[in-house]
Amino acid sequence: MPDAAAAEAIIEAAFWASLQHEEGYRPKISLAYLPPEMVLYPMMFQRSLPLSPAALTKVAPAVKRPGIHLGVWHGETGLHVWGTSRLLPRFCLVLEVIEPGLLVVKYPRTEDYTKFRNVVVLQGSIIKVIDERDVGTPERSGLLESLLGVGPTASRVDRGNVLIQLAISMRAHGRGGTLLMVQPNSTTWRQSFVEPVTYPVSPPFRELTELIAEHPDSNDRTMQERFRRTIDAIAGLTAVDGAALMNSRFELLAFGAKIRARSNYEVEEVILTEPVRDNIPERVHITRLGGTRHLSAAQFVSDERDAVALVASQDGRFTVFAWSSAEDRVHAHRLDVLLL
Image 1: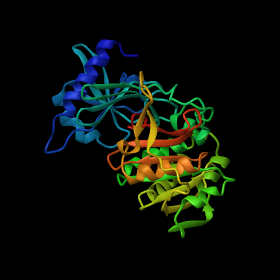
Image 2 (image 1 turned 90 degrees about the vertical axis):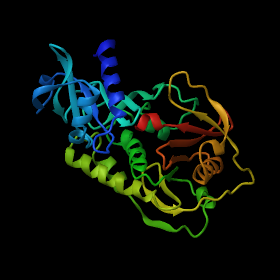
Image 3 (image 1 turned 180 degrees about the horizontal axis):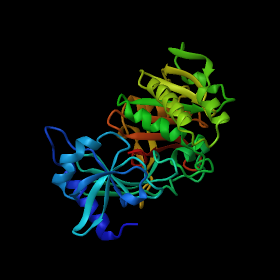
Image 4 (image 1 turned 120 degrees about the horizontal axis):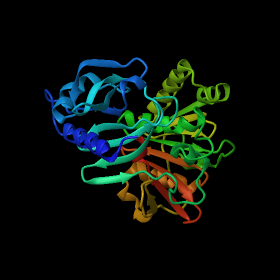
C-alpha cells in the first residue's frame, strides 16, 4: 500500500506528463506501484528513470499498448521507474493516463490481471471517488448489479464480467451504440420496434450463452481470449445504426433495430445518478444525457419495464437505463467512471 506522499508523487508526475507531447503525440501510460521482485518476468532498465513528467513522456511510446505498466518503487533518491511489467499482483495500485488531464486510480480486482476496479477518477480539478454500494435505487436488477460488479454474480469470472466487457467494448469502437437486454420469456418488446427489424438473428446467436454455461469461472487464457473475441463481435454490432438486442441469457436476437414508442407516454425526465461518493440523485430532462439514441433507449425501458438499455456515446459517455418502481420513472445510471 502506498502512503499519501507516494500516491501524491505518482499522481502529480502522471498529471503533468499527460499535458506534454512527444513528436506530436500525447502520452498514454500506466504506472504500477510495486517493486520488481513482486513481478513475474519484469523487464528492468539498467538505469532506473526518475519519476518526472519529462521522463514519463519520453518513454510513453514504449508502453502505449494496453496491459504494459511502468513499475514505480522507492530508491536511494526517492521514487523511480525501474522498468515495465505485464503481470501485476492483486490490489496493486495502478494509475492510468487516459487523456490530457484525465487520470484513473485503479487496482487489479481478480487474479486475472486484465480486469481492474476503478477507485478514483481525476479530471482536471474534478475528483470523483467511486462508490458502487449505492446507485440510487433499492431494487437494482441482477443485470445492473453484474455491470456494477456488486451483485452475487460479481465474483464469477465469466457471467459477472460479461456486461462489463460488453460495455467496455461498446465504448472502444467509438461509434456510439445501444444494447437492449430483455427477459427471455418476454415477447412484448416486439411492439417497441419498427417492423421489419433490419437485421434479425435466427436462430439466436448463443456462443456467449454456451461459453458461460460450459466454462464457469474459467481462468484458462485460451477461453478468455475466446470470450473477448465473442464479446467484441457482439459489441461491434452496436455500431450499426439502430439497437442490438439480447436477452438476459446473453442470446443475441437482432441488431440494427429501430425503436418506437408503443405507448402514448413519452419520456421527458429521468432520475440521473453516478456511482461516486456524495452523488445526489437528480431529476433531469432526457436531452441533458444526449440525443435520439438516449431518448429512444429511455422510451424502450419505460415501455418494457423489465428491460435494461446500455447506451454508449461517441464521446465515451456510458449510460445504463433501468426502470425504477420507487421513483415510477426511468433511472439513468452514468457509468463512465467504472469503465475508463
